Length: 264
Ligand SMILES: Cc1cc2nc3c(=O)[nH]c(=O)nc-3n(C[C@H](O)[C@H](O)[C@H](O)COP(=O)(O)OP(=O)(O)OC[C@H]3O[C@@H](n4cnc5c(N)ncnc54)[C@H](O)[C@@H]3O)c2cc1C
Ligand code: FES
Image (cartoon, rainbow, N blue to C red):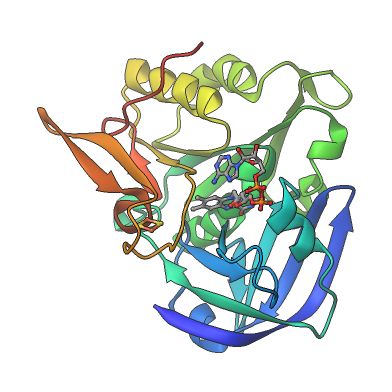
């Protein structure tokens, strides 16, 4: 884990309540893998004290990108930062997606719901470097929740969009769009990040079709590196269940390991 208290924002873009920052942080960029995250200090003031976890959206040379949606005070304060401000960050943290040579030349489907698209762009680029084709499913409540649509397309990724209200693409949940396309696409691997009900449905589809799948989970995180026990979750390990810390053992888990919440 590297602490960089001078990660300079070299580029900022925004779309309503979504933000993309490019940060100069050579040591973290050097080690970052898709699915890993950083912990960001959102202010130099004493409150809020706790850093916020954000996925590494991509890396290029000495830079990493983060892409986030305003969810509360922390992300709102972060959104006020401007080019040339320096952020205090820790990373890269956690275990990322288990991409390996077994995916070489194969087709993978990546499903991002809302801000859950954040870690998948980095993954898609990594898959491309393995000569694996990544098709991206990107869902949001409305068109405003798909700010990265053009970026994905411009970078040559086949992108399938959905909106709950039908303002763009398929009308309905991205998991329903995936279900409709899954017979035709027959991917060798599925990866997803987004709201838990979305990932739960995708996990079930993957199980039925016998497609290995990995999911990036969210949790409240106090430290991000195993010290505070703020992110514990019960998961399956073979026939047993055990408590793990999402920040250390995850945030990425296979579908078989996750004990999904019952829907209320
Ligand atoms: C490993 C990891 C990677 C993440 N990557 C990204 C990313 O790339 N982009 C992005 O936009 N967000 C990401 N998140 C979520 C992000 O960390 C939270 O939105 C952020 O911490 C909220 O902080 P806040 O101070 O703005 O909001 P708060 O004021 O703390 O909370 C606002 C609302 O969000 C809920 N909330 C807060 N934190 C979480 C959480 N971790 N999970 C579920 N609900 C939460 C609260 O219940 C509340 O309703 C990630 C979370 C994790 C654990
Ligand atoms: S966030 Fe502190 S132990 Fe996981």
